[in-house]
Image 1: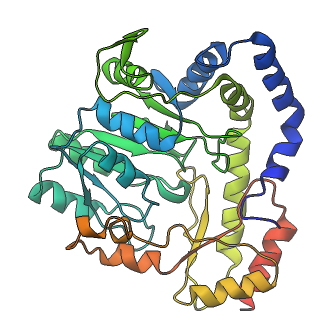
Image 2 (image 1 turned 30 degrees about the vertical axis):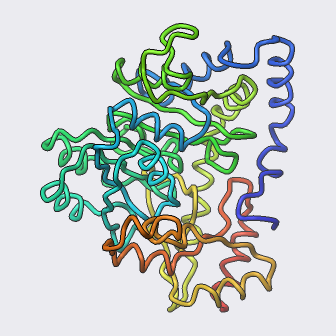
Length: 363
């Protein structure tokens, strides 16, 4: 196994469909903001159950432009978590706003409702980014109720949760804006970078649509500051249209693999993920152990790849420590020191999964 996500095996079964889609774009002579982008935006918003979809250059741009569409600026504070790879922190800092960090739940590594409740009472919060980490949805309904009482707009970071569902509603459809990444390893991934926002608010959708292209309301006429060039190209949109039709089946297989891991990994030094339902699309399967380096070495000797998502809290990143000298989130820091990601992608077979399980249990 080459990596925790084997993209060759992922693409090979549908490569002819992708080649046909790419050829269609090449023959059209239209490569930016054309019919494929329009069609994918319509198809993705329909799949998500949202009114509007606006595609952008990548998932981090989606977060930043969502913040800008909400009016977040250098006078603002935005609540987020620090264990999710710096993506929300980067977007917040790009707007000039200040990140405020909530701790995470000990059992799921997702944003902690209790800490959010405390923070929105004690600190001025102008927006919140709720990250659905590892493909698992956060306690979104509780969080929406808390933030609604405080009139705090909600951005859902769904970069790892395409198709996850709670009460028949998909991740991204609860907040004011849902943000997605289509990085190649995502549950719905392009063959390059890409991102999108979904919303039911016409004003927010309209602002993001302007912001992704220099703030224009018409060509060369900018009426919103903070715009940029952040556009999904026609080829990636055509590829995503093909892959969207397979997403639910891929997610089902990911859940099967994750369930097999959770049922059968049995080691006193390892904490596995609780078995989940449709609220989990198994973007990553993450275990925890206090002896992570030893386990990684053991797996590597057996040719089993692993990764760490994510090893450093955002506020302890070397380039940002001066901004957050007093921040300490104990559960976040504990998790960053213990989490380990195992291979989990739809094309894995049960024999491969069982082999990994056996090597873990024999450690």
